[in-house]
Amino acid sequence: GENVEQHPSTLSVQEGDSAVIKCTYSDSASNYFPWYKQELGKRPQLIIDIRSNVGEKKDQRIAVTLNKTAKHFSLHITETQPEDSAVYFCAASPSGGSNYKLTFGKGTLLTVNP
Amino acid sequence: DAGITQSPRHKVTETGTPVTLRCHQTENHRYMYWYRQDPGHGLRLIHYSYGVKDTDKGEVSDGYSVSRSKTEDFLLTLESATSSQTSVYFCAISTSGQTNTEAFFGQGTRLTVV
Image (tube, rainbow over all chains, first blue to last red):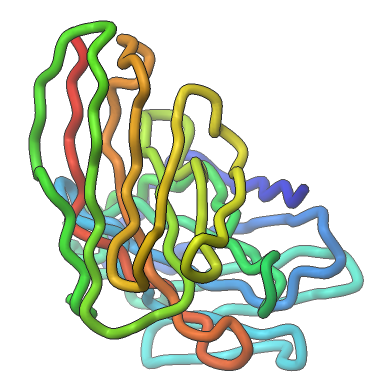
């Protein structure tokens, strides 16, 4: 089955700096890669996703890049703010059929210091 | 909240007792999932369903069973609860898995086995 590795497990940055979280996956059939943000005591919520036919996607201060050859994808947050502090999870999945299921990385605790 | 509701939200139970958690959705999504979340392990898939009466195991399925007799309900049963099953359980739903593959999570159920 799919295996997703996520690094680092914790990340501390100063407000205004950039943050980068990296993930690798093992199953070459995976073609959908979402990122979730989970605030303390809340449910995970999707912040951005990318599919295998796209190399990069941006949404305001966040961006995701995908390298299918190397089987890795990354989340980039620019101009970080204290409200970006949360646990971030990457995930991977093939799409469609009975095999559609998200496999998650173990998460990155991001702390943005004012 | 994508029309997904988990019940109960909190439960304390004794070792050896059976426990059933319910996930209810109102939007007729095909895919439903049960994850457990533990510190240091991220979100791990227990079981998932890709249609009524169609279910399959995830990576941590031992000690759990599921049933989906209608589209809107996905039940997770701990046959005989153990302390290692103390966790936060999240249900998630997803659409067709072909194009719109975003997964939405329920609010979570905090289960304590004493």
